[in-house]
Length: 123
Image (cartoon, rainbow, N blue to C red; front, top):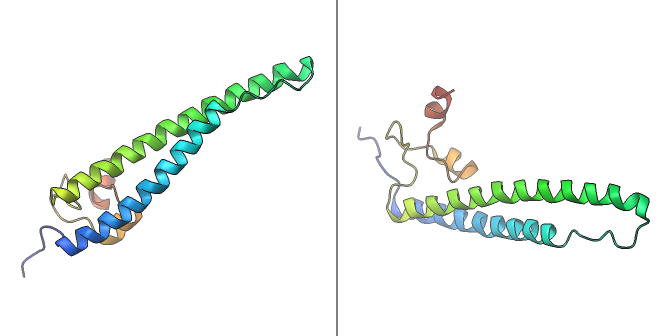
């Protein structure tokens, strides 16, 4: 029995649709994080005592939002790389074993480049 070495064009198209949906959501979230960083300087109407505390909290919130935005951008880059692999017809192939990554894993983690076995053997 011949083992399948790549996903069919129809299967790749299914993954492409899934990734584009996730990419759209990821960009929305990224943009909302960026906006929250820019628009979080509203301590003008509080008393001086609390203003210092609020400014500290605002700085912390900005740092957290900045870290989340960085992680989100990394996720976006991984999704965009997955789209390129779809175009190259190399999507879904484990980069360590060369075997197909199961569809269930790709549906859960559409930017995966390693099978579960390969990922677990790295630990």
